Amino acid sequence: EVYTALVRGHMPLFDLVRCHVRLCRPSPGSFAWRLGRSPGDGRPASTVAHALRHGLYKGEPCTLVELRPLTCFRQQLRLHCVAMGYLVVGDDVHDADRHLDWRYEAALESPRLMLHRLRLSVPLTQGRVEAFAPD
Image (cartoon, rainbow, N blue to C red):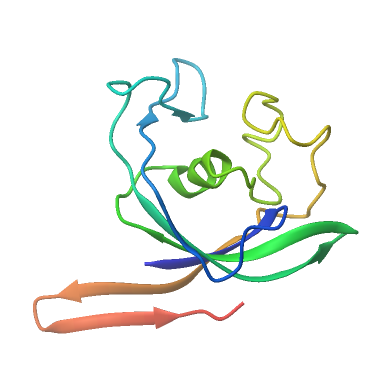
Protein backbone atom coordinates (compact mmCIF):
# COMPACT_ATOMS: atom_id res chain seq x y z
CA GLU A 1 0.00 0.00 0.00
CA VAL A 2 1.22 3.45 -0.92
CA TYR A 3 -0.48 6.71 0.05
CA THR A 4 0.14 10.38 -0.63
CA ALA A 5 -0.75 13.14 1.79
CA LEU A 6 -0.54 16.89 1.92
CA VAL A 7 0.88 17.87 5.30
CA ARG A 8 1.30 21.23 7.00
CA GLY A 9 4.82 22.63 7.10
CA HIS A 10 7.96 21.90 5.11
CA MET A 11 9.24 18.38 5.78
CA PRO A 12 12.87 17.92 4.61
CA LEU A 13 12.75 16.79 0.98
CA PHE A 14 13.93 13.39 -0.20
CA ASP A 15 14.67 12.07 3.31
CA LEU A 16 13.26 8.66 4.11
CA VAL A 17 11.78 8.86 7.61
CA ARG A 18 10.73 5.83 9.63
CA CYS A 19 8.17 6.51 12.33
CA HIS A 20 7.87 3.85 15.04
CA VAL A 21 5.35 5.29 17.49
CA ARG A 22 2.92 3.11 19.39
CA LEU A 23 -0.82 3.68 18.88
CA CYS A 24 -3.66 3.27 21.36
CA ARG A 25 -7.28 2.42 20.72
CA PRO A 26 -9.86 5.15 21.28
CA SER A 27 -11.29 5.71 24.73
CA PRO A 28 -14.88 4.50 25.21
CA GLY A 29 -17.23 6.80 23.32
CA SER A 30 -14.44 8.30 21.19
CA PHE A 31 -13.53 7.73 17.55
CA ALA A 32 -9.99 9.11 17.74
CA TRP A 33 -7.03 6.80 18.21
CA ARG A 34 -4.13 8.35 20.11
CA LEU A 35 -0.35 8.21 20.28
CA GLY A 36 1.15 6.02 23.01
CA ARG A 37 2.56 8.03 25.89
CA SER A 38 4.98 5.46 27.28
CA PRO A 39 7.04 2.54 25.87
CA GLY A 40 4.45 -0.09 26.86
CA ASP A 41 1.39 1.97 25.98
CA GLY A 42 -0.62 0.77 22.97
CA ARG A 43 0.50 -1.36 20.05
CA PRO A 44 3.66 -1.07 17.93
CA ALA A 45 3.08 0.68 14.61
CA SER A 46 5.45 1.72 11.81
CA THR A 47 5.22 4.01 8.80
CA VAL A 48 7.81 5.10 6.22
CA ALA A 49 7.49 8.68 4.93
CA HIS A 50 9.21 10.29 1.96
CA ALA A 51 8.76 14.03 1.29
CA LEU A 52 8.31 14.63 -2.45
CA ARG A 53 7.86 18.39 -2.90
CA HIS A 54 7.03 21.64 -1.17
CA GLY A 55 4.22 24.00 -2.03
CA LEU A 56 1.52 26.26 -0.63
CA TYR A 57 -2.08 25.46 0.27
CA LYS A 58 -4.23 28.53 0.99
CA GLY A 59 -1.00 30.48 1.44
CA GLU A 60 0.44 28.11 4.05
CA PRO A 61 3.64 26.06 3.51
CA CYS A 62 2.85 22.38 2.90
CA THR A 63 4.61 19.22 1.73
CA LEU A 64 3.42 16.41 -0.54
CA VAL A 65 4.50 13.19 1.20
CA GLU A 66 4.49 9.53 0.17
CA LEU A 67 3.49 7.25 3.06
CA ARG A 68 3.94 3.49 3.34
CA PRO A 69 2.36 1.85 6.38
CA LEU A 70 4.32 -1.17 7.59
CA THR A 71 1.54 -2.03 10.04
CA CYS A 72 -2.17 -1.47 9.63
CA PHE A 73 -4.09 0.49 12.25
CA ARG A 74 -6.98 2.87 11.85
CA GLN A 75 -5.73 6.49 11.73
CA GLN A 76 -2.09 5.28 11.75
CA LEU A 77 -0.94 7.50 8.90
CA ARG A 78 -2.61 10.60 10.36
CA LEU A 79 -1.13 10.00 13.81
CA HIS A 80 2.35 9.18 12.54
CA CYS A 81 2.35 12.42 10.52
CA VAL A 82 1.43 14.26 13.73
CA ALA A 83 4.18 12.40 15.62
CA MET A 84 6.69 13.60 12.98
CA GLY A 85 5.38 17.17 13.43
CA TYR A 86 3.33 17.47 10.23
CA LEU A 87 -0.48 17.28 10.47
CA VAL A 88 -2.37 16.02 7.39
CA VAL A 89 -4.39 18.87 5.85
CA GLY A 90 -8.10 18.28 6.44
CA ASP A 91 -7.65 15.97 9.44
CA ASP A 92 -10.65 17.13 11.45
CA VAL A 93 -10.25 14.28 13.94
CA HIS A 94 -6.88 15.40 15.34
CA ASP A 95 -6.63 19.08 14.37
CA ALA A 96 -8.67 20.29 17.35
CA ASP A 97 -6.31 18.61 19.84
CA ARG A 98 -3.76 21.32 20.60
CA HIS A 99 -1.53 18.72 22.31
CA LEU A 100 -1.10 16.98 18.95
CA ASP A 101 -1.17 20.01 16.67
CA TRP A 102 0.63 22.49 18.91
CA ARG A 103 2.54 24.28 16.11
CA TYR A 104 -0.58 25.86 14.63
CA GLU A 105 -3.17 28.09 16.26
CA ALA A 106 -6.06 26.96 14.08
CA ALA A 107 -7.04 24.25 11.65
CA LEU A 108 -6.29 24.71 7.95
CA GLU A 109 -9.69 24.49 6.28
CA SER A 110 -10.01 21.88 3.55
CA PRO A 111 -13.00 20.35 1.75
CA ARG A 112 -11.69 16.85 2.53
CA LEU A 113 -8.90 14.91 4.17
CA MET A 114 -5.81 15.31 1.96
CA LEU A 115 -4.80 11.66 2.26
CA HIS A 116 -5.04 9.47 -0.83
CA ARG A 117 -4.38 5.80 -1.45
CA LEU A 118 -2.13 5.81 -4.49
CA ARG A 119 -1.50 2.10 -4.93
CA LEU A 120 -3.08 -1.10 -3.61
CA SER A 121 -1.96 -4.66 -4.18
CA VAL A 122 -4.13 -7.65 -3.21
CA PRO A 123 -2.63 -11.15 -3.32
CA LEU A 124 -4.95 -13.85 -4.67
CA THR A 125 -4.60 -17.62 -4.85
CA GLN A 126 -3.74 -17.25 -8.54
CA GLY A 127 -1.72 -14.08 -8.90
CA ARG A 128 -2.30 -10.58 -7.64
CA VAL A 129 -4.62 -7.65 -8.35
CA GLU A 130 -3.02 -4.22 -8.38
CA ALA A 131 -4.79 -0.89 -8.54
CA PHE A 132 -3.21 2.53 -9.12
CA ALA A 133 -5.14 5.79 -8.62
CA PRO A 134 -3.05 8.85 -9.47
CA ASP A 135 -3.86 12.11 -7.67
